[in-house]
Length: 229
Image (cartoon, rainbow, N blue to C red; front, side):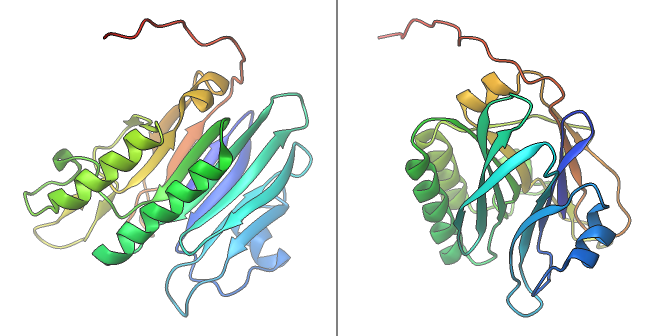
């Protein structure tokens, strides 16, 4: 499964479960095209897992902040004066016990960042609400943990246009879930004020790819809000 982050043309390509033990320049070019010539990756465990993020080196200066078991975090500086932000590419585990460790890993990453614009995207393998699945077979305890994680790090899910669910088990009576998400904090919303998340069609995967368009990067003070006590 893959996401494209687009700003005046495709600028980033994030792939989850690449199933690749290594990624050379030829394979990168074949996968992402010659324009995206920078890459950071986490190798697959055999034929499972693996992450990589590719970007345009002529537009962005990128520093790898953290490589975890299920996440790849990059600090990104726009060479054209668009500010600095952090992009975390994730591929969540399957087992319930590892999902808790996965959320702990993302919490550690978020806390280490302090303040600043943060975008987390990928296949979380987690539901944020009962409506993220087309049947009632859900783990409400894990939903609660995911919601607590979102609240603690003040992350908001970007609304997905074009599709209600992002994964299908491709059975006659299909199970459908929305486990592929883009999460942002308030600082990231300020930087990418016109961000638009769109689902794309695909016949090559049980996941649908999604594209995050961020064509306008603006900076203005956040609105003043009164707290209700």
